[in-house]
Amino acid sequence: VTLEEIQDQWDLIVVGGGITGAGVFREAVRSGLKVLLLESGDFSRGTSSRSAKLVHGGLRYLKEGRIWLTRESVRARQRLLMEAPGLVEPLEFLMPVYEGHGPGRWALEAGLSVYDLMALKRQHTYYSAEEFSQLVPSIRTERLSGGFSFLDAQVDDSRLVLRLIYEAVDAGAVALNYTSVRHIVRNDRGDVVGVVAEDSETHEAREFSARAVVNATGAWAERLHPSPEPRRHLRPLRGSHLVFPLSVLPVHRAVSFMHPTDKRPIYATPWEGAVIFGTTDVDHKEDLDKEPAITDEEVSYLMESLRFFFPRLDISLSDCLSTFSGIRPVLSEGKLSPSEESREHVVWVDKGLITVTGGKLTTFRKLAWDTLDAVRPCMAGMQLKGKDDPAFAPGPETPPPATDLASDYRRRLQGRYGNHATEIVEGTEAALLDPIPGTHTLWAELPFAAAREHVRHLSDLLLRRVRIGLLTPDGGAGHLSRIQEICQDVLPWDEVRWQEEKRMYVETWTRAYSVPLPERQSVE
Ligand SMILES: Cc1cc2nc3c(=O)[nH]c(=O)nc-3n(C[C@H](O)[C@H](O)[C@H](O)COP(=O)(O)OP(=O)(O)OC[C@H]3O[C@@H](n4cnc5c(N)ncnc54)[C@H](O)[C@@H]3O)c2cc1C
Image 1 (cartoon, helix red, strand yellow):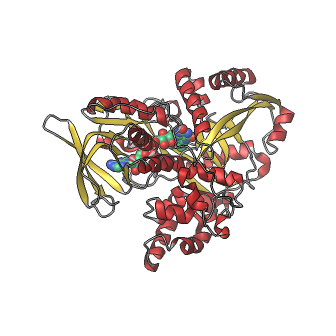
Image 2 (cartoon, protein in one colour):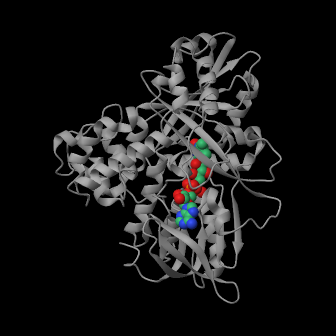
């Protein structure tokens, strides 16, 4: 559907297609509302494709004494592990303990015991220094006194957003990407009655009416609704990651440690056949309309900790596959350092405009229900339904047709594409059921996503529908001819457009997802 094809009147319009908007969209449809979701760029193009990809309780919150927030997150994690296998998967963490650096054994033992208590399972173990250095053979051993293992979980953040959006669409809702809300429309009494939206590229505009509007625009939220708290405003904080091949940084479980200079937590996390290393936490002063990118200072900060904790690996920046940066929408009085700021979400209600920002991936469902509680007074007769239903539609009643595809891949497809997983494998030629080298992504996912998942530009396909832009050398530049070959029948692009899309993709990747050039040159 296009902007001009869809109907005028909606119960609820959700603005923003990140995890917060997608969660509200999915749950609102479950409650029987007629819902429209509008996203100004591509679905998940904001922070929700640029996170650390953890579904976690947040040991950090526990350290800060935020017991309820941790408990909520641990419960959400446990549910997602049960309800989204293949998308949300358990992840073992290893945390070294060093004499005189970071919290000691007994402080961590206490924290991890509370963490386990919340999950109602004992999931942590202490290892001696010798045992621990066998688990992570390349780790720094100087002053290592031992270490812990514990369990959390990880996710493909973009695919989580997309699964929620497409399940809502399958249930009858409408979602448009590249459609920006210009402003909120109110009547004489100031009550919200709709929005004016426009195609972000052609600028063709339309008005839609709605009984309520949810502003789920993350770091951009104050553009549609200024903070009602005069002293607290959104403070955009950037967090950046480096991505390395597993062969260069061989960690088969996540490793978490404190940065040698400022003692902030840093993670090396195996993900989709590569390793994500981060993150930073700095004020983002750049224009929010430009894609965020890692800076030289952040690269140096991360490389310092990598070299400190993995001294024998001799890793250089030229080994880095890609980088990515996301913006935390944090509500702040501007007095604290970035890492001290609270990460709790806020819900502001203003005559039918419900603004919700600051949520984590992990707790998206709780946030969606808090938002719908605030929407309810605008919807006479609305009943909130399905709070205890599984977050996602159950898998197909009959298993996907027998193929030679290994069960891990089938589970992965089911988790990412839900009931559409079968369409990816059914009748597909064997060569497309191979993984793209260095990743767990099958070639067959590309034509499926290109045909079915609102792909307007090549970057939508390679950075968010699948993640090969992050996971393969040069953003997958070496695969572009094959990608054109297998997707050209399902995308309405002629040769000129294909060449233009490839040029724009390489340009975007180089600007926002590669290692910054001066750093690269200085190590080469
Ligand atoms: C570095 C980093 C690591 C993180 N790691 C984790 C983690 O491991 N686990 C976890 O649970 N959380 C994590 N988080 C937090 C989590 O990723 C974010 O809080 C969450 O993704 C925010 O989602 P959102 O939907 O509110 O915002 P976004 O994902 O930014 O979505 C907002 C959307 O609104 C759209 N938009 C803006 N203006 C308009 C408009 N006028 N009209 C239409 N659309 C508009 C934008 O294009 C954007 O797509 C991390 C955050 C950062 C920065």
